[in-house]
Amino acid sequence: MPLQRRIPKFGFKPINRVEFKPINLDVIQQLVETYKVSVVDIEFLKQHGLVSKNDRVKVLGRGEISTVAEVKAHAFSASAIAAIEKAGGKATVL
Image (cartoon, rainbow, N blue to C red; front, side):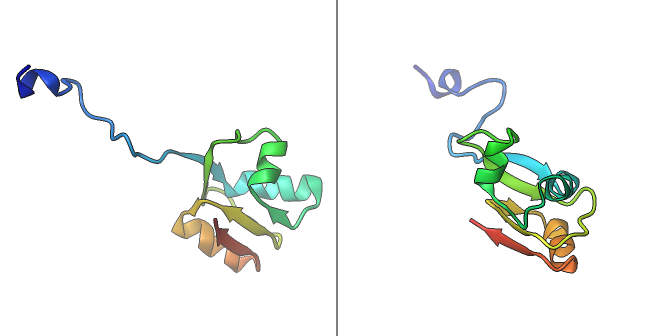
């Protein structure tokens, strides 16, 4: 079959594309206040139903965080890292 018939007509999705589940800082702040924890990691988010077992998590910078918390995720936005460190916390990339 010719090449022009084998190539998809409506765009291309890379096979190796990595999709992240976004979690914002306001959600993390609410979790820290509600459950009185200092470490928010993937297992904690799975226990509370925010992500499933195969999701990769990216923390985004919407909202504010005012408590000291260590956040562990697969990726962070630059504004999220700045906000977490400004509050005295630590952003750890898995």
